[in-house]
Length: 373
Ligand SMILES: *Cc1c(COP(=O)(O)O)cnc(C)c1O
Image: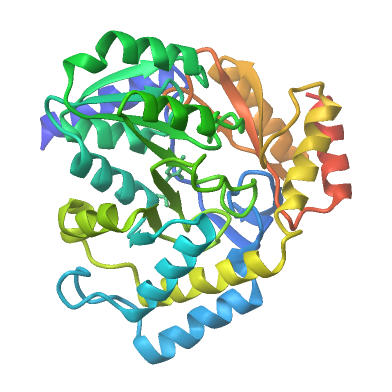
């Protein structure tokens, strides 16, 4: 296949020149915040397992118990023979935590967004998305065929201007936002966006991938009409979900193609996620810890006050961010450099995430290492 290899080689060379080439590195997570990379043990400030629940004894036990009884895979799409009763319990718990009538669990957060958005809007409809929303919301928007327009980050007035100008030209309108922005850690004005959506007969979908378990959850009237999230981050397991009204969920069951045409989440993963949600509910202080540590770190560098477990340190170009990440690794810390196209050009950064399993002393040592950069 000479032209194929030639084609990809050229692409890779080009990315290399721009310092945007990425590669997989083995990283074995032993305890939630310690990672072995190429034989070296590093303290990670790069995991989204904010509460350490991926390694929690109760969560691991729930997965093991489920494996013994139900085996590993779901065996089919949920609409065929894959609709395990554990999903119902998991969905009831999620709906209960979010204060919605119903919920629906998908294979992953990514699969949720690429399935749900095209089920709700299409050609002749309008999607307004915050400038910094996660890639999978944009992929869902593209798949839908609706017209996509972007509003300035966290700028309700900018969204309103777009609605005033364009809403009348389209049938339905869907507004997309993250609740916690994944690469910036700041919070969206969800309640204001919800009110704006209601005034313009638009629907708001919020992506709470980095919120559940860490940041305060909105109540029903202030929350989005469609609340999406993942079980892969603070919940420590895997999978995605939608929380919404019963009619919306009933409709998504038959219309979201990533649910209809993809095998259900492994039951053991559903069992683990359910147990993790119980842990989150029982220990209301658990989510405070990563937030407290993030605030402490941000304060040390005069950054805006942290609102979530994510703190970015924007360095500018790709080379600078990569060099900083390598220097921190030499000091024993794993902190990933985030580069375009994940973030806008000129905003390459270190992205620090804090966990309930970090100690205050860990953050003190991290601050010292970052100060030397
Ligand atoms: C990680 C992430 C997703 C995807 O969730 P997965 O369960 O990992 O597929 C979706 N949205 C946001 C904002 C994310 O950060």
